[in-house]
Image 1 (cartoon, rainbow, N blue to C red):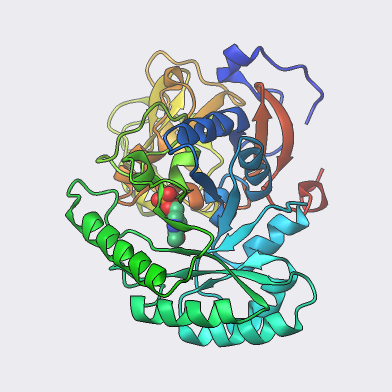
Image 2 (cartoon, rainbow, N blue to C red):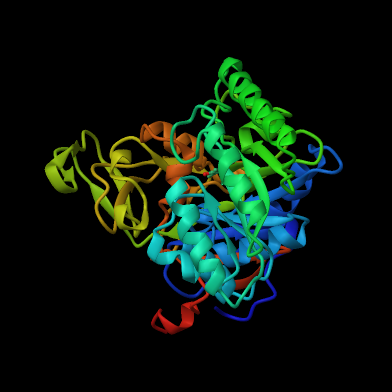
Length: 413
Ligand SMILES: *Cc1c(COP(=O)(O)O)cnc(C)c1O
């Protein structure tokens, strides 16, 4: 990266043109992330807490910088899916509480406790392993844990009866601390609210059982991004926001009150060449040119997370116009049609995903529709081969892939 004062923050559509390195990179706008955290917190009851869900490398955005920014903007805790993700955050110097949302392997429990991660008990078997490890763990004492109650998702989580039983064991164990109890909705992003209501009622029944048994977990929580955006967060609860933090709507059925997309994927033209009628492009010759046109090569492919399902379907923003993909997406490259009137040259900036409206690129949600998937899969799929440029005030504050292992130790030059 060249030392460059960079453009004014307001004029950052062309930012990072000073980037020296692989043309294809993901730009992560930490200011947008902070604004999203503030906005989401503003939707919560005053005594509720926002948990920043940063699993899967912060949905592809880069776990450590995103976690730091979210905490600085007022998130009370982090949540991840795997012990490895929690370790990565600890290695990055993060000391905030980190909730492990999913099932962990019994072999990982000692590591999880040693790093001060908060396991979720979603099976009776895991409780026994955690109890045993807590007795041996010198790191944190008592060990905080949470219980996930299954109210209808039928994924991770224990039944209500089991939850009460587990909670009794936890409160009776001096090595354990009942940090929270939660459930997860199956349909919070769908138009029909009836099943969300059923699950909420089931959790309320669970709370009543706990109260009757005299067990008081430190907190209860239910909401993911969709539920948070719909106002389904009670007083004193946590809300676990993932996708909304990144400025992406959970689904078309959920309102988006001014959240800003955090990720933009940009690249540069690697070659410009003419196509004549009858020329085909790419593997399988799935695109055949019918009239003279100009093509541009962009060095991004499915190994970067640019899905092969986008072949002949998606477009990139080039010179302010939409440049359609010609032929198949290959592992490392795509070919696009240079839009009429655009004077593309080698090195010209291309926007593959996100960015300002005038860049004419598809959003993560639009790419998801074209690839017949969800935006979650689009952003989490952006691979570690794509450098992340973390921007603050429009300037590059940090480069990496969000991992605690410095990019400079792995990338040449
Ligand atoms: C991933 C996850 C979330 C976050 O979901 P979003 O829809 O991204 O907000 C919340 N809770 C649990 C249990 C999860 O696994």
